[in-house]
Image 1 (cartoon, one colour):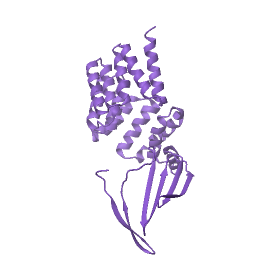
Image 2 (cartoon, helix red, strand yellow):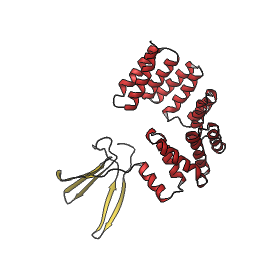
Image 3 (tube, helix red, strand yellow):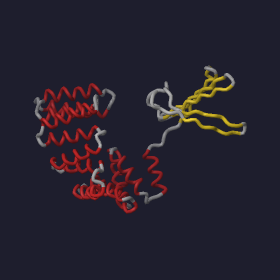
Image 4 (spheres, one colour):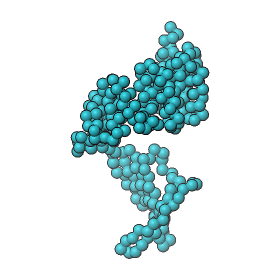
Length: 289
């Protein structure tokens, strides 16, 4: 490993001082491990090594003395989710506006909990005066986007943020989304481009621009945007999906079918991409009578 640093520090105990060095190491722990700690101690010619690995449901501790395995223990330790922690925080402080807002965002993405999402977003709006200016703007915009459906009021809330923070990525991108929903794709495109200029590390930012360009009939511009996206994010499934959408808009149904078949074949283990690709392939099939 290169470009890493090791930290040396003393630990004091009743028997004196022990010098400890801490630094990153190459690990054989399986990918997907939430956290892993590896310990190595050497004294008087003996070596004690231990690993502690935690994943979503358990903690596993293993120990070796001079290379001989001496202990292995596994403990069930189900993790509390963000939702669990936020619900607990709200239970302790029923006016915790930021917790309501964060919980509402998470639940809004889960269609099985839409009613609860509306409830907590409304609470965030009710207690918005307890938030900072920028978070208050987000809370108002989210409330009008997801609860009342009053997009003009949501846009007005984002404008209050952009008046003070003109490069705020979230307000720019979400304003673009709202203008798209209002079928004002020219204004949406302006916001999307400003957002991408602020932060080009988010792949959907390219996709949003390509979508607006496609809706405006600017197919060559959309294709160029997707080319830039592929250079920036090689292998990203969203690129193939978006190329399928562009081909479909251009009524090149054979190309659209190929792209969406590529999406389906490249993501065999993803229920989302499988369902999404199947739906779009059904669109193609409907054009063939």
